[in-house]
Image (cartoon, rainbow, N blue to C red):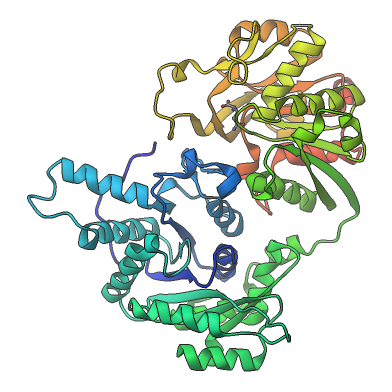
Amino acid sequence: MPKEPETGYDPSLGRKFIFVTGGVMSGLGKGITAASTGRLLSNAGFDVTAVKIDPYLNVDAGTMNPYQHGEVYVLKDGGEVDLDLGNYERFLGADMTSDHNVTTGKTYQHVIEKERGGDYLGQTVQIIPHITDDIKRRIREAAVGTDVCIVEVGGTVGDIEGMPYLEALRQFAHEEDDGDILFTHVTLVPYSKNGEQKTKPTQHSVKELRSIGLQPDILVGRCEDELDPETKEKIALFCDVPTEAVFSNPDVEDVYHVPLMVESEGLDEYVMERLDIDGEALPTAERDNRWRELVTRDRDTEVDIALVGKYDLEDAYMSVHEALKHAGIERRTEVNVQWVDSDEMLDRHENRLKGADGVVVPGGFGTRGIEGKLNAVEYCRENDVPFLGLCLGFQMAVVEHARNVLGLSGAHSAELDPETLHPVIDILPEQYEVEDMGGTMRLGAHDTDIESGSLAERVYGDTVCTERHRHRYEVNPEYIEELAGGALAFSGTADNRMEILERDDHPFFFGTQFHPEFRSRPDRASPPFVGFLEAVTGELDARDLGDQEVQA
Ligand code: GLN
């Protein structure tokens, strides 16, 4: 796990802060609203970063079930964090570190370790001031060197777990200059049966905020539609903010359109004015317009991609889904994702995949749905359907090859069948002694060397790539020679670790031990996803690669 910073900070750096809280209920998309505002500020020339606060006792998201919490997002430093950090990276176009995800577990662990070390010199160690001080330190340190830091508090105002954070923010605002901090509160504005926009829930949650000493500067109402002028006036009156400080956040078809919506509402301009940085913003005509161009691009074609997973919740594969979208932007292709439950893949699975132009088998843990994933791999291999296997999907491509091409019956990953006679995927040597589960996998960004002349080189346009990892198992070195003797090749390696596999008898059969989806951005689509879409639309066929080289 990354080391805790112990250094002091320069309070003059990281000068402006936007604190974002949520009211009424969770899941309102306040992270997306905040990230969108950040995108617009960065379009206007500011250096923007973000901190996500998760008021749970887990030290990080690494041990959490994606079924309950959505995907575990992996940062380049190996931090396993909340999926909101993925949204911040994608929207802001900036790499974050684990220091940008503050959890109760991290904060308490640090304070308790210091207490055990005798650092508090006999004091009684308490939530206020010791925990709150540690929270403030973390926010300030994450903001160092940037112009604006967005701090999003997970959960809803009033949750017991969130209290120390709101108190820390109150103190923070008290310590900083007026005008350097903006409190934004995102709430739900529901419709009544007779079609009226109701402001009572907003009023109540603002009342709750004020009872702990926080007065919001900006209110954002999540509603199916834009807020009516009367709704805005009512919210302004009862929550004690100017009417211009009330914004709508209506439903949009694509999250990438939220920055355009926020811009049309004028939220970005209002934020800049209130933080007194409008004078330093680039004139409107000179602002970075790439985002708008990317997300509103016309599409020439449309494809159906099956994503074969085990979780019933789409949030569990958020980055894979986004990476497919990014590749679609680059290739001007509309990508329709079909969610296929791997449990449905046991019987007559061909029927589930028949309509798909390409198949992705993403990462995962545990045995549920494994045979279905293997069926999906086999179907792709035998029917020349473009296939992209990620982490566990890569490992299943190895197992399928061992079983069905090499005839190693019962071959498996030792994770999924510890008794297998042919553990073609086995535990990493450094994992033998590991007992703690948190933060102990092979994590974060590592380099892969790519073989020249391979499909992988065509995909990456380079003989090296750096991608993020999160795994405990890998290709067993004892089987490498046998596995790679025929049509299958390991074209990407890191020392004796197999990182990329491909087939030369198939249009596009590509697997990666790493997770390329975590580096993918709307303006920097991930190469394996782009290559996959090229194959799906018939512009790339791995079987022609050798010929092209001969011609050249
Ligand atoms: N369960 C596999 C491993 O630990 C794959 C992990 C993943 O897909 N992220 O190696």
